[in-house]
Every structure is written in structure tokens, then in C-alpha cells.
Amino acid sequence: MMNPCTRRALMGGLVALSFSAATLSAHAQAYPAKPVRFVVPYPAGGASDITARLLAEKLSESYGQSFIIDNRPGANGIIALDAIAKSPADGYTILMGNVGPNAINAGLYLKLPFDPIKSFSPITLTTSVPIVLLVNPEFPARTTEELIAYAKANPAAVKFASGGSGSATHLTAELFKKMAGINMVHVPYKGDIPAMTDVIGGHVTMTFATSIAAAPFIGTGRLRVLGTASRSRPKSLAQYPTIAESGVSGFESTSWGGVLAPAGTPAPVIASLHDHIVKVLAMPDVRDRLSKLGADVVASTPEEFATHLQSEITKWSDVIKSAGVKVE
Image (cartoon, rainbow, N blue to C red; front, side, top):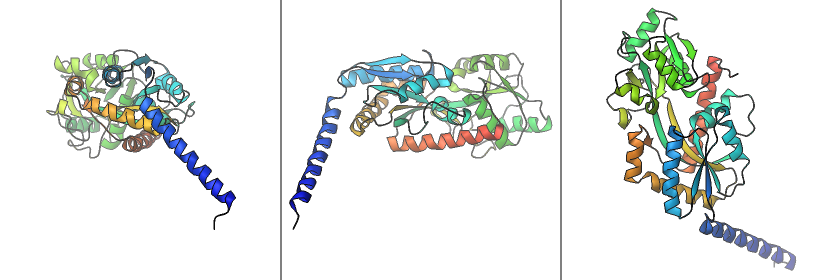
């Protein structure tokens, strides 16, 4: 027979659990009771900013509460992620994450003011933006295979431009260099546009860039696409072969976006944000707008996003270590 003390302890535990569940349920039902701050680690106008603003507009309509964009560029996204990591875990501050700040930086910097995994609660992946291999139209190689053959026949003659040391485009080229078994000389620039401009001018051989940044140059014929770095041909660039199809088996690099919250954000709030964001991503006008930007919609579970994030951190940390990449 249960003694009175044990019975009281058990009843107290059940009441506490019931109260906790009721509190979480009430939190989810009331959310959001005030405007939500949507932090973007880049200036206005870029792919992450455009995606975040599109989501914010639709989420404001869906919830009947404002989602306000807060652009916090600087330090390769570290400023924005640090702000999120130190924000209250109540769902009123969320982040438009990206491969650079959330995955690449983990291997690029010896010390960060937050933990790339433990400081955040993934909500959902949102987009995948193809990265393309570009050359000057006058360059003799017309395919990825021909570029590789040219590089092997002319050691160190191929110069590749990037948007900066440690950038996604730089590391994509380092991965390509390693997997294709070729030697190339890195020429860093302050951004993808200056890098592509010098490829057009014939000062460097090639570069990798996101399809969004490269679209104006591809459309006018000033740059030639040799292939895409996607696992499969993206809908927006289906006419071009993947680099993996072109002899570099397993090669893959994409610029992805996803929404995260501070670690410890209540599960019902994460679930609510996930459901609303996924519904927004399924809207035809949203998919059409993102497709025109060159982005493919990706909706994942929080668990799938967490697995993807860990995989990307491991992958790019290995590339950074192998290539000996350092930032100033």
C-alpha cells in the first residue's frame, strides 16, 4: 500500500506535469501576441533578405501579427547569429539562416561567441539556391570535362575568382579542385559581383556563383555556364548538366536558407512556426516568386534541418581544413 508521503509526492508531480503541459499549450495558442523580429544576417536586397521579406509578409497575414525584418549584416553573419543566440527563447526573435553563417563559419573561425548547433533551434529549411560554374565565353573549354582537361594540361594556369576567402563560392571551388584532382590559383575579391566582372574581363579563368547573382550575366551572354553544383539539375537551370554528371562524381554545393530560433524556444511555438512557414512555402505565388529568383523551395521538418545542418558543418569544416583556408 502506498504511504501518504509517496502519494503526495506522486500527486504533486502529476499536478506539475499537468500545469507544464497546460502552460505550453496556452503559450502556443497565444503565440504570437506581439510583433516578431525576423533577423537577416545580410543587407537588404540579397537572396536571404528577399526570401525573409516574402515569408514575413505572408506570415503577418497568416498570424494576424507583424513579422518585422531586422537586417544585421557584418562579420560574415556572426553579429546576427550572436544576437539570436542571446535573445529570449520565446519565439519573438527568429533568424533567416544561411549556409555561410550557420555552417561554414563553424569551421572557419577558431572561436565563435555561440555554439553553431546548441545555440539554435532549427525550424525548417526554406530554399536551395544553385551554385553555377562560370567562365568567359571566349575561354576554350565549353564543358566541365574540357575545363578539367585544360587544367591538367596547364598546371596552375587556371585562376579562379571568389567572393572572398572563406566564402561559399571560394569553398565550392576548393572542393571542386580537390575532387577533380586539379590545381588552380585562388584570386579573392570583395564579393561575387567583382569576381564575375573580372571573369568577364578575362583577368581570371572561372568562378562559382549563385544562380541569383549570376542571372544578369548569364542572360546577356557575358558569362557561360559549364555546369551546376547541385545534386540533380535544378528546375531553374535544367538545361545545364550537373558537375557530378560531368565526371566529378558526388560533387555537390548549394547555397541554402532556413529559419531558426534561439535554443530552448518552446516546442509548441517551433511547431506553430514550422506549420505556418511550410504552408507559406507551398503557396503558388511564393513558389513562383522564388523560382524566378533562381531558388528552389525546400520545406523540411526541424529534425531534417538539424541533420542537414550538422552534415553541412562537417562537410565544410573538412574542406576548410584540407585547403588550409584562413580568414583575417
